[in-house]
Length: 334
Ligand SMILES: [Zn+2]
Image (cartoon, rainbow, N blue to C red):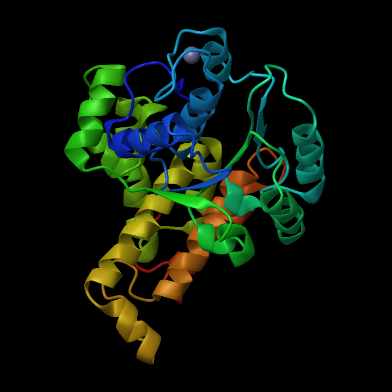
């Protein structure tokens, strides 16, 4: 993750940073924040920035970036900041993790100031974990800041959502992403790199733009061919499982998201809800609900890449759902 106190700050987070800075300066910092981010737009970055804001030894309206507290937050090991994420073999945040966090928050802070908990992605909290967290949200210990980062907050119980102040981060315009990526990483074909992953500059920042462009284009070709019945799902799955799978799955997610957007723009979503017709372009046989289901499954696969399982088989099952009924047409293999 990019350091929360090192420049350049993502410009599209400026408004959210100003609002948080002002709230802290005026002593009206909420005890629970929900950062609702578009995927890859810097929810974790903003959460770390907010942690530095309340823990900084000097700044009031913004972290100074230089004091011990700021540097520790930036290095991701400040003793008063707890990061809670799904554990290796799971895509869920479990109740044991929330219980451990509650215990930690009940202790006195090391620095005599705030204690901060960052749950990310918070939409990975399972039902039991969310309920356990609710108690802390209802009666938070003094000087506690709970930050939930989520791309799909609707997965969280309304009781949890209603106790958090919401900050919305929308995807920046393409030109703004390119300017930030260029400042951060230097010149590169950031436009093509963003095409591969969608408007997700934080994800793009972690990749090599040339590699991303190449893998993105190749991934797109394979998916279009699968959807058109022009390539063999088994061969394609084997090829993906062998190289660049995590990156390819991100590109796959973007490919599906683009199809959903296109369907929504053409009014197919409304029509689909009424009568169940299908999208008319590259994946004519998939309706929007099926596309959303596929995105969930791609995310599941991406979240469990550390688990030893036959990725080829899992991919092949996904690919078969893209391919038109009847399997490969024209006998073309790829
Ligand atoms: Zn500081």
